[in-house]
Image (cartoon, rainbow, N blue to C red; front, side, top):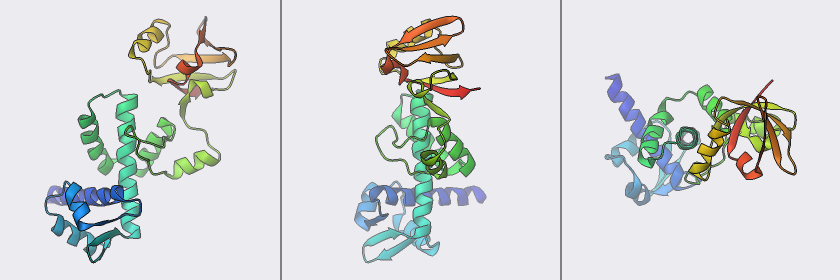
Length: 223
């Protein structure tokens, strides 16, 4: 019975997220919502949303309540962060697989895990499709005082050491060349200079790399 309730809850959550995505104010006509929703029994779902205080009905317009908007932003945030994680970090190329998995993750990630994922990714502002990711508490703290956990190598201060977390090359062949140089996830590098070329130390080896390449290498600082 609980499984059926979970599925019903997920269906309602999908609907508030779809409504939020249709309009930044969380309002749309019934026709707009019906044309793009994955929910089969839209009318029944809307009734349940009204009963839970998540939406308000005004004629043919459905609008999220304050509680509904909060829920929708939380779901959309989890979904789009999951898309960044799978597409950028894990390099999953199948967009349908990414979306399907993100649809699951948006319902199960806790608040603390979501904040950790966001910090790990460096507080991204957009998903792989260019859609905005609603900011969380960690993003607001980051914008004021806290550096992201993971950041491009180019942003590392001279003299600091950091561990390579992942690499996102624009040219796939570049990944092989970086690997041949020993620049792979898990390796600790130390930045020696920024200009005229970026110079890093990898163990006993010193390498000069292009600034553009340094923006594709994401690192986590180590003491």
